[in-house]
Amino acid sequence: MTEPASVARIVVLISGSGSNLQALLDAAVDPAYGAQVVAVGADRDGIAGLDRADAAGVPTFVERVRDHDTREDWDRALTAHVAKHQPDLVISAGFLKLVGPHFLAAFGDRYLNTHNTLLPAFPGIHGPRDALAYGVKLTGATLFFVDAGMDTGPIVAQVAVPVLDDDDVDALTERIKEAERRQLVEQVGRLVREGWTITGRKVTVP
Image 1 (tube, rainbow, N blue to C red):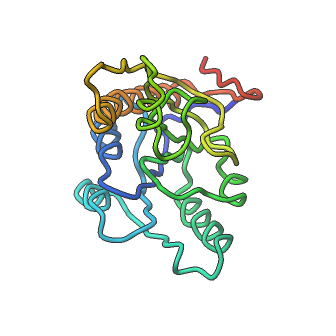
Image 2 (image 1 turned 90 degrees about the vertical axis):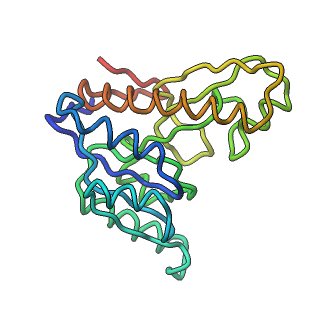
């Protein structure tokens, strides 16, 4: 059982514009939310998400894969950087790198990711495109704890998004993003306020 913290410390990892990060920053302004973003990490420089963090006065760091001799070295460095901030929860908010065994050993039971389909259907980076091509009538977003697989970890929550007859990939992706963002903010708040238990593949929030 991961007990709730009075004010949970959250580290957010990003690779792009940081719209999910901004939603978390906005939610955390309310003390009743129960969480504070204490650091934002990225795998690249010059992205809008880092500007959002700077504007909110949140410390940032960048750990680029190419600055390390091996992927394992990068994984160790990322793990150490995140650990400095003593997070209760780490959130992948559009972080486009797969973490390795060192990171998962440190944070595997508290590292959240969100995916833009209803897992286990359509994992990977082209979820909405694959869902649309398959002809499903319902897709959505999945929030889950990360494990060593590709979008295979224990599921925290899912939200459904209908596929419309005139949808293209961009329109469907945008509607999923809106639902995904709302779910992320709601469920992160719930987890930090109430705690959680992971038993096998089952996540339980009291």
